[in-house]
Image (cartoon, rainbow, N blue to C red; front, side, top):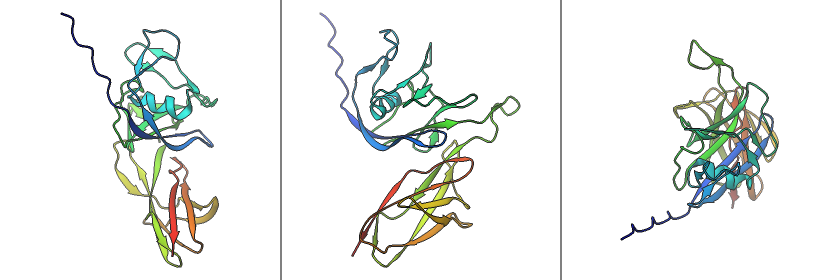
Length: 220
């Protein structure tokens, strides 16, 4: 009697964002990951599960990326949306504000996870066994709604490779694409809600990847 066929896992959604050296390549968006193989080089033996981190990259870019296959590691992401980092730069993978220690094909993701790829351009230091002065992500914390005429505090943090968040002073904050100012010692800046509707906020800082864009809804 033959063994029963394995059941496919249910689809689920994750968020994906890709940052190039100087611009956002894929704005943060939610994508659905299905239990289907991903093969980038035409070789059926080079197959990865679509519900690993590679599935988020595939869905978020519409397949507009390429990379080499490495035995035991799977695919690298060498070019994304036509952007190939100059040496020694490369695309680095983080999940839920933590550096992934595994590749695209081996990094497990679950419903609601945040997947981020960005250009890491630090040089490897043999003495440290790691990058010297690595680029790390910024994160934003702000209320989702704000009453018109009230003031909101926007807080920015920098994430360590292990996911520790610390206040990020000196980050440049933008509201609706216009420069608001820099964060203070506690990594915060304030903004007043003046017009009804939605306001978008993000920040940049030297040595960090720009933050995700947060949307604040200004209400009566």
